[in-house]
Image (tube, rainbow, N blue to C red):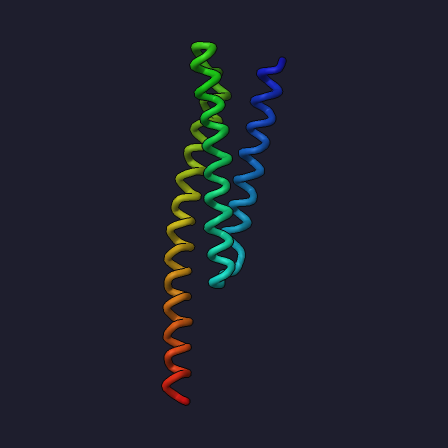
Length: 112
């Protein structure tokens, strides 16, 4: 029964992170927002990696894993890949926003 409880808890955690990631993708963007998003996506990757590591560690000790654990590990991997894509996107937007701010500041200096 303990194994089922562990899997249910981990599955709920992955679903929660997936929902949070989906909400973050839809929200607006600004320089500070993009920096915050990158930090949160990285934090999600750490949490998802910890879940995968737990499943692998447990499987090594027992010598096998359940289909549910295997499926959850695959889902974690998919979510990690999506987080990495979002990090790349937000880092690009942050760079573009930073360059735009710099150009605006330089333009204002030239006008004075």
